[in-house]
Length: 321
Image (cartoon, rainbow, N blue to C red; front, top):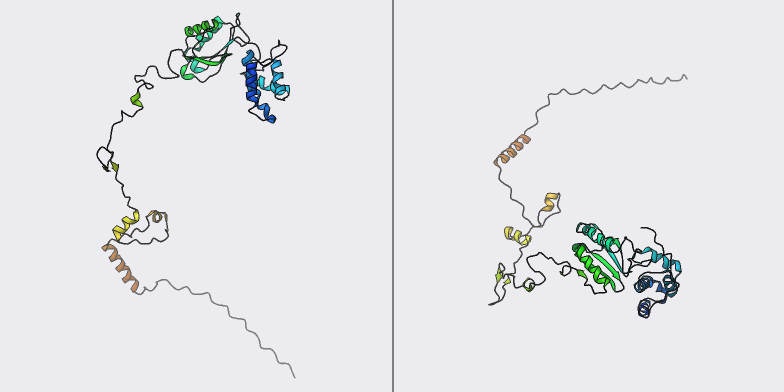
Protein backbone atom coordinates (compact mmCIF):
# COMPACT_ATOMS: atom_id res chain seq x y z
CA UNK A 1 0.00 0.00 0.00
CA UNK A 2 1.36 3.42 -0.96
CA UNK A 3 2.11 6.06 1.66
CA UNK A 4 -0.91 8.24 2.45
CA UNK A 5 -0.36 11.81 3.56
CA UNK A 6 -2.55 14.77 4.44
CA UNK A 7 -3.21 17.41 1.78
CA UNK A 8 -0.79 20.32 1.67
CA UNK A 9 -3.56 22.94 1.82
CA UNK A 10 -5.60 22.70 5.03
CA UNK A 11 -8.48 24.77 6.45
CA UNK A 12 -7.87 26.86 9.54
CA UNK A 13 -10.46 25.12 11.73
CA UNK A 14 -13.10 22.42 11.90
CA UNK A 15 -16.34 22.05 13.85
CA UNK A 16 -19.05 19.42 13.78
CA UNK A 17 -22.44 20.64 12.59
CA UNK A 18 -25.53 20.39 14.75
CA UNK A 19 -26.70 17.25 12.94
CA UNK A 20 -23.26 15.71 13.28
CA UNK A 21 -23.08 16.56 17.00
CA UNK A 22 -26.14 14.42 17.64
CA UNK A 23 -24.45 11.46 15.98
CA UNK A 24 -21.20 12.13 17.86
CA UNK A 25 -23.13 12.01 21.15
CA UNK A 26 -24.72 8.72 20.07
CA UNK A 27 -21.33 7.10 19.50
CA UNK A 28 -19.74 8.47 22.65
CA UNK A 29 -22.61 7.11 24.75
CA UNK A 30 -21.89 3.60 23.45
CA UNK A 31 -18.56 3.38 25.31
CA UNK A 32 -17.44 4.03 28.90
CA UNK A 33 -15.22 7.04 29.61
CA UNK A 34 -12.04 4.96 29.70
CA UNK A 35 -12.90 3.39 26.32
CA UNK A 36 -13.81 6.50 24.34
CA UNK A 37 -11.01 5.79 21.87
CA UNK A 38 -13.22 3.03 20.41
CA UNK A 39 -15.27 5.75 18.68
CA UNK A 40 -12.34 7.05 16.61
CA UNK A 41 -13.41 5.45 13.32
CA UNK A 42 -17.11 6.50 13.56
CA UNK A 43 -16.09 10.09 14.34
CA UNK A 44 -13.66 10.22 11.44
CA UNK A 45 -16.42 8.91 9.19
CA UNK A 46 -18.84 11.59 10.42
CA UNK A 47 -16.26 14.29 9.69
CA UNK A 48 -15.81 12.93 6.16
CA UNK A 49 -19.55 12.75 5.46
CA UNK A 50 -19.90 16.34 6.64
CA UNK A 51 -17.12 17.94 4.54
CA UNK A 52 -16.36 15.22 2.00
CA UNK A 53 -12.86 14.58 3.36
CA UNK A 54 -10.85 14.41 6.61
CA UNK A 55 -8.71 17.49 7.23
CA UNK A 56 -6.01 18.00 9.86
CA UNK A 57 -8.17 20.28 12.09
CA UNK A 58 -10.82 17.50 12.13
CA UNK A 59 -8.21 15.00 13.30
CA UNK A 60 -7.15 17.34 16.11
CA UNK A 61 -10.77 17.94 17.15
CA UNK A 62 -11.46 14.19 17.31
CA UNK A 63 -8.25 13.59 19.29
CA UNK A 64 -9.38 16.20 21.85
CA UNK A 65 -12.88 14.71 22.11
CA UNK A 66 -11.52 11.21 22.72
CA UNK A 67 -8.55 12.15 24.93
CA UNK A 68 -6.17 10.58 22.42
CA UNK A 69 -2.76 11.77 21.20
CA UNK A 70 -2.99 13.42 17.80
CA UNK A 71 -0.58 10.91 16.27
CA UNK A 72 -2.85 7.98 17.23
CA UNK A 73 -5.83 9.44 15.35
CA UNK A 74 -3.54 10.40 12.46
CA UNK A 75 -2.37 6.76 12.21
CA UNK A 76 -5.93 5.51 11.92
CA UNK A 77 -6.92 8.10 9.30
CA UNK A 78 -3.89 7.39 7.10
CA UNK A 79 -4.13 3.61 7.42
CA UNK A 80 -7.71 3.09 6.14
CA UNK A 81 -8.26 3.98 2.48
CA UNK A 82 -11.94 4.64 3.21
CA UNK A 83 -10.90 8.08 4.48
CA UNK A 84 -10.25 10.82 1.93
CA UNK A 85 -7.23 12.87 3.02
CA UNK A 86 -7.76 15.53 0.34
CA UNK A 87 -10.81 17.31 -1.15
CA UNK A 88 -12.80 15.19 -3.62
CA UNK A 89 -15.75 15.86 -5.89
CA UNK A 90 -19.28 16.02 -4.55
CA UNK A 91 -19.78 12.54 -6.01
CA UNK A 92 -16.84 10.13 -5.80
CA UNK A 93 -17.18 7.45 -8.49
CA UNK A 94 -15.44 4.20 -7.55
CA UNK A 95 -15.20 1.86 -10.54
CA UNK A 96 -14.59 -1.81 -9.80
CA UNK A 97 -11.84 -3.15 -12.06
CA UNK A 98 -11.47 -6.70 -10.73
CA UNK A 99 -11.76 -9.68 -13.10
CA UNK A 100 -15.58 -10.24 -13.19
CA UNK A 101 -16.29 -6.55 -13.82
CA UNK A 102 -13.37 -6.27 -16.25
CA UNK A 103 -14.70 -9.19 -18.29
CA UNK A 104 -18.16 -7.61 -18.36
CA UNK A 105 -17.08 -4.17 -19.54
CA UNK A 106 -15.38 -2.22 -16.74
CA UNK A 107 -12.98 -0.71 -19.28
CA UNK A 108 -15.93 1.01 -20.99
CA UNK A 109 -16.95 2.55 -17.66
CA UNK A 110 -13.42 3.81 -17.04
CA UNK A 111 -13.38 5.37 -20.50
CA UNK A 112 -16.58 7.27 -19.69
CA UNK A 113 -15.07 8.59 -16.45
CA UNK A 114 -11.89 9.71 -18.20
CA UNK A 115 -13.87 11.51 -20.89
CA UNK A 116 -16.45 13.04 -18.58
CA UNK A 117 -14.43 13.77 -15.40
CA UNK A 118 -10.75 13.65 -16.28
CA UNK A 119 -7.69 11.91 -14.95
CA UNK A 120 -8.08 9.07 -12.47
CA UNK A 121 -7.51 9.91 -8.82
CA UNK A 122 -9.48 11.21 -5.85
CA UNK A 123 -7.81 14.59 -5.96
CA UNK A 124 -8.59 15.16 -9.64
CA UNK A 125 -11.92 16.96 -9.40
CA UNK A 126 -14.00 17.93 -12.42
CA UNK A 127 -14.23 21.60 -13.40
CA UNK A 128 -17.71 21.97 -11.90
CA UNK A 129 -16.59 20.32 -8.63
CA UNK A 130 -19.23 17.63 -8.99
CA UNK A 131 -17.17 14.53 -9.68
CA UNK A 132 -13.92 12.70 -9.09
CA UNK A 133 -13.24 9.03 -9.77
CA UNK A 134 -10.89 6.16 -9.00
CA UNK A 135 -10.49 2.47 -9.73
CA UNK A 136 -10.97 0.10 -6.79
CA UNK A 137 -10.75 -3.62 -6.15
CA UNK A 138 -13.70 -6.01 -5.78
CA UNK A 139 -16.79 -4.48 -4.16
CA UNK A 140 -18.60 -7.81 -3.81
CA UNK A 141 -21.27 -7.48 -6.52
CA UNK A 142 -19.71 -9.87 -9.05
CA UNK A 143 -23.05 -11.36 -10.14
CA UNK A 144 -24.16 -7.86 -11.22
CA UNK A 145 -20.97 -6.85 -12.99
CA UNK A 146 -19.91 -4.33 -14.11
CA UNK A 147 -20.71 -1.90 -11.32
CA UNK A 148 -19.63 1.28 -9.55
CA UNK A 149 -20.04 2.67 -6.06
CA UNK A 150 -20.89 6.36 -5.79
CA UNK A 151 -20.09 8.05 -2.47
CA UNK A 152 -21.60 11.41 -1.51
CA UNK A 153 -23.16 13.14 1.47
CA UNK A 154 -26.25 10.91 1.22
CA UNK A 155 -24.30 7.67 1.51
CA UNK A 156 -22.42 5.06 -0.49
CA UNK A 157 -24.58 3.29 -3.08
CA UNK A 158 -24.12 0.59 -5.72
CA UNK A 159 -25.14 0.95 -9.38
CA UNK A 160 -25.00 -2.39 -11.18
CA UNK A 161 -25.43 -4.11 -14.55
CA UNK A 162 -23.99 -0.98 -16.11
CA UNK A 163 -23.15 -0.09 -19.67
CA UNK A 164 -21.31 2.98 -20.91
CA UNK A 165 -24.60 4.60 -21.86
CA UNK A 166 -26.19 3.82 -18.49
CA UNK A 167 -23.27 5.38 -16.58
CA UNK A 168 -23.44 8.48 -18.81
CA UNK A 169 -27.09 8.93 -17.88
CA UNK A 170 -26.37 8.49 -14.16
CA UNK A 171 -23.69 11.19 -14.30
CA UNK A 172 -26.05 13.53 -16.16
CA UNK A 173 -28.78 13.05 -13.55
CA UNK A 174 -26.37 13.58 -10.64
CA UNK A 175 -24.99 16.75 -12.24
CA UNK A 176 -28.56 18.03 -12.63
CA UNK A 177 -29.35 17.26 -9.00
CA UNK A 178 -31.87 14.55 -9.84
CA UNK A 179 -32.55 11.50 -7.72
CA UNK A 180 -30.99 8.37 -9.18
CA UNK A 181 -32.35 4.92 -8.37
CA UNK A 182 -29.72 2.62 -6.90
CA UNK A 183 -29.12 -1.03 -7.68
CA UNK A 184 -29.26 -2.79 -11.07
CA UNK A 185 -30.12 -0.45 -13.93
CA UNK A 186 -31.80 -3.33 -15.80
CA UNK A 187 -34.75 -3.32 -13.40
CA UNK A 188 -34.12 -6.75 -11.89
CA UNK A 189 -34.23 -7.25 -8.14
CA UNK A 190 -30.81 -7.80 -6.61
CA UNK A 191 -29.21 -10.65 -8.58
CA UNK A 192 -32.32 -12.56 -9.66
CA UNK A 193 -31.99 -14.47 -12.96
CA UNK A 194 -33.36 -12.58 -15.96
CA UNK A 195 -33.48 -15.39 -18.56
CA UNK A 196 -35.03 -18.12 -16.43
CA UNK A 197 -38.20 -19.74 -17.80
CA UNK A 198 -39.75 -20.00 -14.35
CA UNK A 199 -40.33 -16.81 -12.36
CA UNK A 200 -39.05 -18.17 -9.08
CA UNK A 201 -39.76 -15.06 -7.04
CA UNK A 202 -43.36 -14.71 -8.27
CA UNK A 203 -44.78 -18.21 -8.74
CA UNK A 204 -46.59 -19.06 -5.48
CA UNK A 205 -47.01 -22.76 -6.31
CA UNK A 206 -43.29 -23.21 -5.78
CA UNK A 207 -43.65 -22.28 -2.13
CA UNK A 208 -47.15 -23.34 -0.97
CA UNK A 209 -46.64 -27.07 -1.58
CA UNK A 210 -49.49 -27.43 -4.07
CA UNK A 211 -47.20 -29.08 -6.62
CA UNK A 212 -46.23 -31.87 -4.27
CA UNK A 213 -47.59 -35.28 -5.28
CA UNK A 214 -49.33 -37.36 -2.64
CA UNK A 215 -47.59 -40.64 -1.99
CA UNK A 216 -48.41 -43.74 0.05
CA UNK A 217 -45.69 -44.95 2.33
CA UNK A 218 -44.86 -48.68 2.07
CA UNK A 219 -45.95 -50.93 4.98
CA UNK A 220 -48.30 -48.21 6.19
CA UNK A 221 -51.42 -48.73 8.31
CA UNK A 222 -54.39 -46.53 7.42
CA UNK A 223 -55.60 -44.53 10.42
CA UNK A 224 -58.89 -43.47 8.84
CA UNK A 225 -60.49 -42.12 5.69
CA UNK A 226 -58.76 -39.14 4.21
CA UNK A 227 -55.84 -39.42 6.62
CA UNK A 228 -52.29 -40.17 5.78
CA UNK A 229 -51.52 -43.77 6.76
CA UNK A 230 -49.01 -44.25 9.50
CA UNK A 231 -46.09 -46.58 8.85
CA UNK A 232 -45.94 -49.88 10.68
CA UNK A 233 -43.49 -50.15 13.49
CA UNK A 234 -41.05 -52.73 12.22
CA UNK A 235 -39.54 -54.88 14.96
CA UNK A 236 -35.82 -55.31 14.68
CA UNK A 237 -34.68 -58.86 15.49
CA UNK A 238 -31.46 -58.93 17.43
CA UNK A 239 -28.62 -61.26 16.64
CA UNK A 240 -29.09 -62.97 19.99
CA UNK A 241 -32.71 -63.84 19.24
CA UNK A 242 -31.73 -65.29 15.88
CA UNK A 243 -29.14 -67.49 17.60
CA UNK A 244 -31.62 -68.70 20.23
CA UNK A 245 -34.12 -69.57 17.53
CA UNK A 246 -31.54 -71.71 15.76
CA UNK A 247 -29.89 -73.48 18.70
CA UNK A 248 -32.59 -73.20 21.36
CA UNK A 249 -30.20 -71.78 23.88
CA UNK A 250 -27.52 -69.13 23.77
CA UNK A 251 -24.05 -70.29 24.57
CA UNK A 252 -21.50 -68.19 26.35
CA UNK A 253 -18.59 -67.18 24.18
CA UNK A 254 -15.07 -67.46 25.67
CA UNK A 255 -12.50 -64.77 25.20
CA UNK A 256 -11.47 -64.59 21.53
CA UNK A 257 -8.12 -66.09 20.63
CA UNK A 258 -7.67 -64.41 17.26
CA UNK A 259 -9.31 -61.79 15.04
CA UNK A 260 -11.55 -64.23 13.16
CA UNK A 261 -12.97 -65.55 16.40
CA UNK A 262 -13.47 -62.02 17.77
CA UNK A 263 -15.57 -61.04 14.73
CA UNK A 264 -18.10 -63.83 15.36
CA UNK A 265 -21.33 -62.73 17.13
CA UNK A 266 -21.70 -63.67 20.78
CA UNK A 267 -23.72 -66.79 21.55
CA UNK A 268 -23.36 -68.33 18.10
CA UNK A 269 -23.39 -72.16 18.23
CA UNK A 270 -20.37 -74.12 17.17
CA UNK A 271 -20.58 -75.58 13.73
CA UNK A 272 -21.03 -79.39 13.79
CA UNK A 273 -18.05 -81.40 12.66
CA UNK A 274 -18.44 -82.95 9.25
CA UNK A 275 -17.98 -86.69 8.96
CA UNK A 276 -14.75 -87.49 7.16
CA UNK A 277 -14.27 -91.25 6.52
CA UNK A 278 -10.79 -90.70 5.19
CA UNK A 279 -9.90 -88.89 8.39
CA UNK A 280 -11.22 -91.75 10.54
CA UNK A 281 -9.10 -94.31 8.68
CA UNK A 282 -6.08 -92.09 9.13
CA UNK A 283 -6.65 -91.82 12.88
CA UNK A 284 -7.00 -95.60 13.24
CA UNK A 285 -3.78 -96.18 11.31
CA UNK A 286 -1.96 -93.77 13.62
CA UNK A 287 -3.28 -95.62 16.70
CA UNK A 288 -2.13 -99.05 15.39
CA UNK A 289 1.30 -97.70 14.57
CA UNK A 290 1.73 -96.23 18.03
CA UNK A 291 0.82 -99.56 19.72
CA UNK A 292 3.67 -101.48 18.05
CA UNK A 293 7.11 -101.72 19.67
CA UNK A 294 9.70 -99.52 18.07
CA UNK A 295 12.16 -101.33 15.79
CA UNK A 296 15.73 -101.63 17.08
CA UNK A 297 18.03 -99.00 15.80
CA UNK A 298 20.63 -100.12 13.27
CA UNK A 299 23.12 -97.49 14.25
CA UNK A 300 26.22 -98.65 16.12
CA UNK A 301 26.44 -97.55 19.71
CA UNK A 302 29.01 -94.95 20.28
CA UNK A 303 31.67 -96.23 22.69
CA UNK A 304 32.47 -93.80 25.40
CA UNK A 305 36.05 -92.55 25.63
CA UNK A 306 38.19 -94.79 27.94
CA UNK A 307 38.90 -93.40 31.32
CA UNK A 308 42.48 -92.89 32.32
CA UNK A 309 43.53 -95.09 35.24
CA UNK A 310 44.20 -93.33 38.46
CA UNK A 311 47.92 -93.05 39.29
CA UNK A 312 49.18 -95.61 41.81
CA UNK A 313 50.40 -94.32 45.09
CA UNK A 314 53.27 -96.03 46.82
CA UNK A 315 52.77 -97.09 50.45
CA UNK A 316 54.60 -94.96 52.93
CA UNK A 317 57.82 -96.47 54.24
CA UNK A 318 57.97 -97.51 57.87
CA UNK A 319 60.50 -95.76 60.00
CA UNK A 320 63.20 -97.86 61.56
CA UNK A 321 62.84 -98.39 65.20
